[in-house]
Length: 340
Image (cartoon, one colour):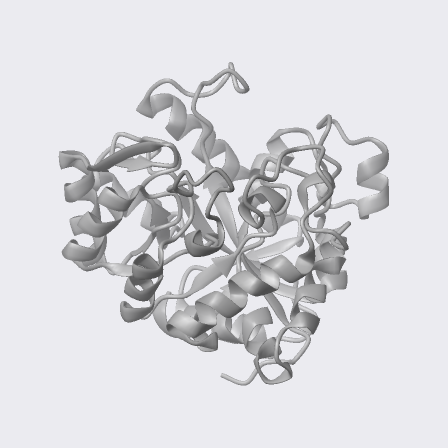
C-alpha cells in the first residue's frame, strides 16, 4: 500500500508496562521527564512525542515480568503472569476510551487506520513472553482481546528456551505454536533460543522478529559467541522465507560488541550497519523498525544522537534514499495490512 514518506511504524514499544511503572505517557516528554518515577532511565517515549516523530502505528506489548533480582515483585507462576498482562490490557483499553490510541486487531483495521487523517496512535497488541497464556486452549481468550502476535519466550518460559536460557520448545510450547499456526496467529521469534526457533520453523506458523539485531555484527572482542538474543543469518533468512519482517533495536548493547552501561553511546551508523547486513540477507523490503525504546532502558543506552523518540528517523538519513520510506513504515504497513 502507498504510505506517506514521513510515516513511522514501530514494531516494539512497551507502552503499558511503562504506564504501570508510573509514567504518564499522555504528557509531553519534557513534562514526563520532569517527574519521571523510573530512576536511571531517562524517558524517551510519550504519545505527543510519538506523534511528533510521525508514528502512526506501533506494536504495543503485553509484557509480564518474571521475578528476578531486579524485579522482586515479578510473577512466579502462570496466574501471576496473567494478572500482569490483564492489567496492561486494561491500560490499553483505558487509553482507547480516552482517545489516546486506537486498538487495531486485523489487517483491514490497520489499512483503514493508515488512510485516516489525524487518527490517534494505532496499537497492535503483541504479547512478549507467552506465560500469561494458560495453555493452547486459552488462545481464543487472547484473540478475542485483540492479540494477534505472540512471542513464546523472553527468558525461559513454560513454552520455550529464550534469551540467556537455551532450550527447545517444551511440549506445551509445541502445542501452543501448533495451535497458533492453525488459528492464523503470528509467532514473534525475538527472544527465542536457537533450538526453540528452529522448532517453531518446523511447525510452520507465520513469523516475524519484532526487535532483533544481527548476530553477525555482535561477535565479542574476546572471541566468545554472541548472545542468543540476536538473530543469526540463517534465522533472519527463515523469518523472511516465511513472509516476515525483522525489526531494528535502538539499544547500544545490541549494536556494539562489548558495550557496557557508562560507555560512550554506540554511533547511530552502527545501527545502519545492522540494517545493511539484513538487507544483504533478506532485502530492504523485510527490514523494519522495532526500537524497543523505554523497554527497560532510557536515553542513556540509546545510540548517540537519539536523545528522544523524535530522533528515531535520524537512522533513515543513513540509509539509501530509495529504501527510507519502506524501513521507516512502509514495510510494516504492507505486512500488517495483509498478514495481521
